[in-house]
Image (cartoon, rainbow, N blue to C red):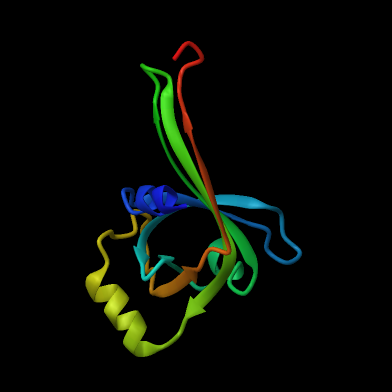
Length: 127
């Protein structure tokens, strides 16, 4: 579990898997940070990831190196909660290590505090 937390902190792009109410399941890439053991990312109100707020989501990050057929992945599952405290959102905006790659305003912060955190290392079959 500690290694999974460490690996989560090494990347800035992951994927959120959501099943919005009445909608189709989706997997959406997001720029993220890890703050106080929570995965946080910015989104736009009305987006698929914003609609997932208040539901349980899966968040996945990985690293794959095709040449030696190795890598790792981490899967976090937990509730997606909108961050509404102005002091907290101000601190997140000020201290964020990544900027959203997608265009447009991304002023809504969402936090995922994992209730489940798993991962694995992938190596070539002959190693």
